[in-house]
Length: 224
Image (cartoon, rainbow, N blue to C red; front, top):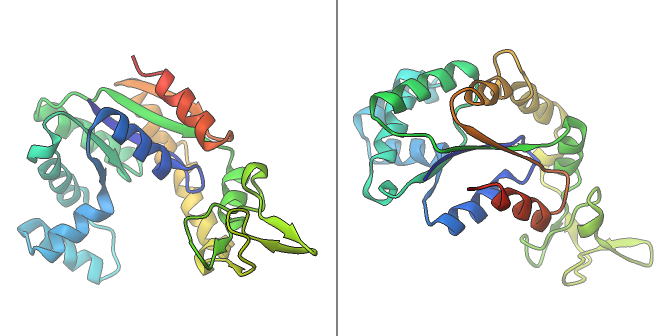
């Protein structure tokens, strides 16, 4: 089963991708990891990509797409794959789909986790990190995982740790807006890519505003 997954920052895409990956026994492939591996292993494509990355430029699609295809041809992908983080825009979607067709790789499903932009931003900015364990979920904007209250002070809802912090990039509203500008662009951005695939493959759209378990249940129910 070959799957693409889309969702804005703050939608829980990584969590849901992991659940789908485990359910169907396919590797969860992230494009960032592909870049790092090719560069560290000094593959021909990795060496080409590094030139652009070192200049602070985007890596061209004619380097990125073959790099991704090489990964999708590896042995652990024989039963399928879940690709996360690519494509990010319409041009990349067209290039990837064309490449998959040439390789006779069928795209079975496209997952779209829908979430209103203002909610996605609040979820990012509402994250609170527990000093004891960063995996303890705390978010001031999500009712189910709001930090607990102790004498008017927020504490970890899991272990009652009194030292909750934030990540600097989670509080950078301008950076969040920049990423979301790309994702929510229906003309050339990521949502344009999603709309492109709606004409090419079976798209499963789920409401990402619910809790993790509810989103997972709704998502898995739509696979046939």
